[in-house]
Length: 162
Image 1 (cartoon, helix red, strand yellow):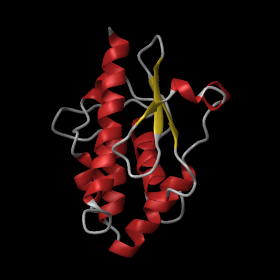
Image 2: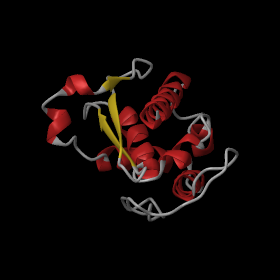
Image 3: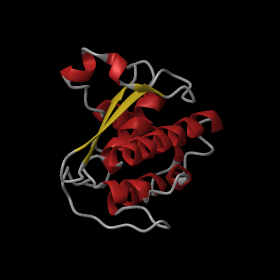
Image 4: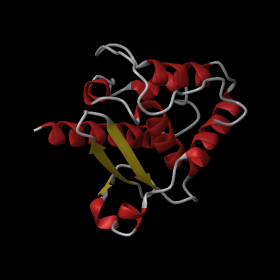
């Protein structure tokens, strides 16, 4: 992450545990980083997550029809979820550079969830975005967009477990 983020956000394959009432340690650390900052710096941290969102791999960039749209987002956002044979979940997002808030939310979800197992992702509270302290800084519509991203991720994970 950039200079403002205090956390390290472990990379894929890190082992974490969570219950239905708590965030996994990576998301918890991200939430703590946001709430430790004054409002103006929270927006800057959100922009850093936007900048850190990885590009799509070629298999999705060349076939955008494989991505699921998230129409609740105010800006175009598309996502895909893959689950490895060992249960590790990988997340892929596509959002325009001109949509930093949407990209930032996708970046938070990527940093906090990519590489976890399905159970850990499914245990993520749907309203966790409230723990970021952004309610007074971005519109409720944008926050609902982030919740919609998470809901679609969780639905795709459940679908892939069948």
